[in-house]
Length: 125
Picture 1 (cartoon, rainbow, N blue to C red):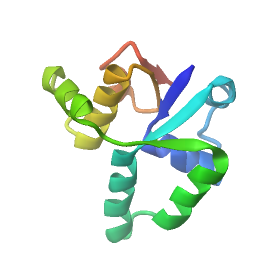
Picture 2: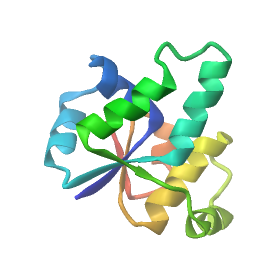
Picture 3: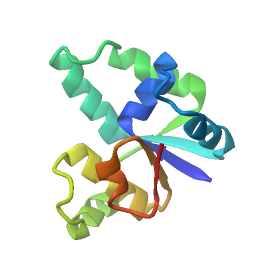
Picture 4: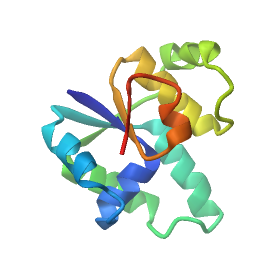
């Protein structure tokens, strides 16, 4: 199973946060490939610039490489998948992750119920 992880899931992995549930850990362990969208790195860069991210983005990217989490660049196909999304969630980063999951297709691991409302591909933990 190919798995796209939401930004907060990556951060929880990196700090071994207890909010990363046993269900999430099991799915991560079973995944054949784990991806993080370039959009998540962009979101983290914005948060780092605002002082809202405790980790340094350079360290996050390096740790992804060490853990075998692959970066998935945003493509024109992903952007086109945004066109059909209902306005259930206003966060542009979350909407893009939903579009990526639909376009690829792959499962999207998230703890955000608004994200999970979009697609049968989302796995809510």
